[in-house]
Image (tube, rainbow, N blue to C red; front, side, top):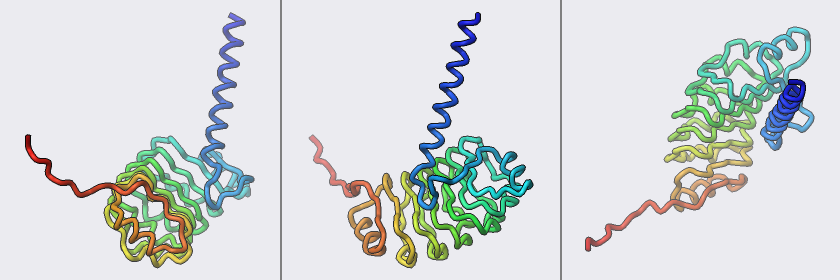
Length: 214
């Protein structure tokens, strides 16, 4: 029994170590987030720290099965980075625009089928990622996000690329990998953003010729 307990203890330590390593790995390389950033992984702990006078600048709520955002988030007045990967979100509340310190918002692998409208009022966002969702269009008003430097829309269903993309003067990276784009669409987007690095997959062959019947 002692041996089994010791093995279980080792297994729990190993699982905790792997979880922490995975969490650290997904945070590395986020544009606008330094390696020395202190992350919180629990909203209640973040709120407690904030109420005690500790600035909460980064919060990771990955894999929390969230269908809506908790309203208490708005209390974190110093929050600059919010990670919401792998939840069940399909919309964002209007009050999110009240979080004026927010600069990095990560929403990959949720259930968005449209570009959330509230984001267009968040003109201080510098990094926005909406990868691996079901978004079909980039909104015409995307140029309202004047501070945007990095935009991730990989793995979506986007079929419209408005000219207003070219009116994002600070944009440096646009990730459109794994969207079905024709060569003409890729040339159009690249021409609109000569100052940016645009990531795209191989263009799709969207014209098919009828095969003769045998």
